[in-house]
Amino acid sequence: MQIHLFDTSQQVGQAAAMLIAAQILQKPDSVLGLATGSTPIPTYQELIRLNRDGVVDFSRVTSFNLDEYCGLPVEHECSYHSFMHEQLFSHINIDLAHTHVPDGNAVDQQAECARYDMAINQAGGIDVQILGIGRNGHIGFNEPSDTFVYGCHIVNLTQSTIAANRRFFESEDAVPRQAISLGIGSIMNARQIILLATGSDKADAIHRAIRQDITPRTQASILRTHPNVLFLLDKAAAGLL
Ligand code: F6R
Image (cartoon, rainbow, N blue to C red):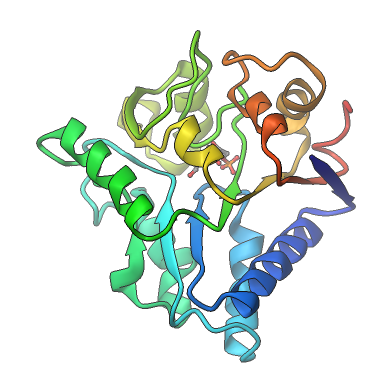
C-alpha cells in the first residue's frame, strides 16, 4: 500500500490522470475501471486535456464502470451512464462500444450481475481500477455490512449514501434506493487500484480504511490487502491519519 499526499484536489486529479496516461502509453488496449461522483472529476478533466493535447490515445481502451442506480432511465441526468458521457466519454476518442456501465434497469438483475462480471473477465480483467470512497467507507456501492460480497450484486443503499447523493437530485425522495455494483472481489481482482479521496468529509472514512481494523463495516479497509494499491489524498482527506 502506498499513500501519496497532495495539497489540493486538483493535484490529486493530475496525479491520477498521469498514472492512467502512463498505463495507456504502456498498454494501449488497457482495461480501465472507472468511478463516478465528484471526486474523479478533476482526473477526468485532466485526461480530457491530455487526450486533446495528443498525449494519450483512448481509441483502443476499454472501460467498465463500478456501478449504476437501479430504476433510473439511462438518459436521466443523474444516471451514471449520463455522468460518464458528460464528464468523460463525449470529450475523448474512446470507442463508445468499448465503454461499459452496468444496466440498472435489467429485468433479470441476477443475470445482469453475472453478465457484467463475465464481460470484465472476457476483456482480460481490469488493469487499473479508479475508486472514490463514501463517507461510510463504501467503495463502489459496497455499503457497510457483516460480509464482503465477491461479485457484482444488487445493493440497498444506506441512509448515509442516500443523503450524500441527494445533492445531485431534486429531493431525497428522488434518490434511487437500490444500485447495481461491482463486488469487492471484482474490485480486488484489478491489477492496480487507485483510490482518490479529497475533502475533510472523507477524513474519517480514510482513517478507518487505512488505520483501523480490516472489516466489512468499512469496506475500503480490505484494499490494504491488495498487492498494488495507491491512496491519493489531499491534505483535508488525510487530516486524521
Ligand atoms: C461512484 C462510486 C462511489 C463514490 C463515492 C464517493 O461510482 O462508486 O463509491 O466513489 O460515493 O462519491 P463522491 O466522489 O461524490 O464523494
